[in-house]
Structures are given as structure tokens and as C-alpha cells.
Image (cartoon, rainbow, N blue to C red):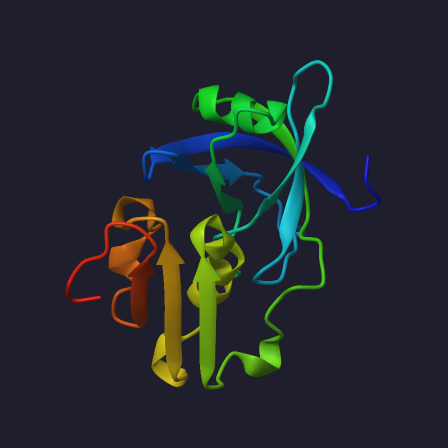
Length: 172
């Protein structure tokens, strides 16, 4: 296991966001749980063999007691396959936030421009959701293969310019 602190968690909600991406709410209920917007976690699944996967937190630092992950399906990754078959109530182990790619608190009231492609939007979602959008100037440039692969387009629309590499809309 990693040197980051670990916490038991339970999957309390699963949503199919796109054809290939599901979101998972993981309730840990621990007040000592910490992460910075943009960080990732290790998730340990109760499976044989390779049982660890790294996933970026998409929820806000304002959310307490749980984190959310958006996970794209994979034909090769056993933990991702486990998650995409999991049911509400499933228990897992998670670490606190890790990694040096995060939005420092002193930038939370700044003018910010986010640029993302595909599932690479996940760390920026946590950053975006952690901001007080009324106190900062924010632009979001987000591209995906096609329109149906965009994650949370309604939530991002007031701040975003969307592009697709296939099946472009005339207005984009």
C-alpha cells in the first residue's frame, strides 16, 4: 500500500453519465479526510490480483463525508472493470488526496482558464466545483471525441466552450 492514509469507504451512488463513464459517490464519513482540488486517490478493490487503481476526485472540497469519481470503462484495468460492475453498498478502501497537480487556495478568487480533453477533465471538475464562481473570472475549454462523450456539459455550459473531434455541431 501507499504511504498515504487509507480510509474505508462505501459506494453510495452510481450514475451512468455517458456511454462509457460512470460516476461513483464514495462515502467515507471521516472528518480527517483531506484532499486538494485536482488530486487523485488510490482505490483498493476486494478482488484477486491487481487490486489498486488510481482515480481523480471530481467532487468539491466543500463536500464533506464523501468524494466522487468519474471513471471511464476499460477493457484492461481490473479495478476499473470491478467498479463498472459494482453495486451500491460495495465496500472499498481509499486513500486521501495525492499528487502535486491541484489548485492552491490562493488562486480560488483568480481569473482562471481551464483546458481539458476527454476524461482528462476530471481534475478540473474538482477545481471548478471547489471555486466560488461568483468571485472569479472563469473560462473552460473542453474537447471530446463527440458530443455524447462530454462529461457534465450542462453544469459547465455557462463557463465553457465545447469542441469535438468527430461529429461537430455547427454552433461549436
